[in-house]
Amino acid sequence: MRRPRGFTIVTFLLLLGLGAGIFWVVTYGNAHWENYEVKSILGQAANLAYQERSDKLVHDFIYRKLHEKFDVDVQQPGGKMAKELLIDAPEENLRIERTKSPEHIDIWFTYSRDVRQPFTGLIRTVTFQHHVEQDLSATKW
Image (cartoon, one colour):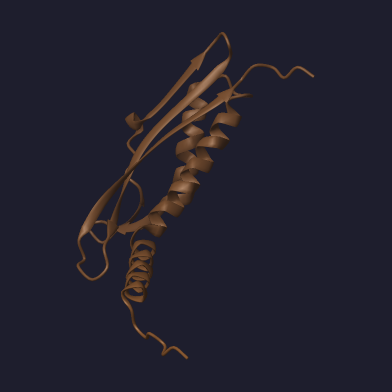
């Protein structure tokens, strides 16, 4: 009968991979979960554009939803509390374009988020870019 091998290089590599995966989830998991929520908001905005013909209303809808999801309380220098977006999303990073024939909308959105790494405390900026499109032509049954 063969003797059990014990701790091998394959075991070491599996444990190293598991540790790296856990480190990634702890560091970047929250940012990617928020990215999923932003993508969902943009999808809702594209669906809203089917009913609303004003790009300004779609733009306002996106930023209202972003503020509902990602506002955090930040203490100002004078001790006063203010709400601030957790993600860095300047309004010039949102672009909405419509075409008339065929009726179609494209929404481009770029934002960034600061992520603090465990152990070192270093802050990394993670940038996300989204493109959402929606056909706005009338449905033919």
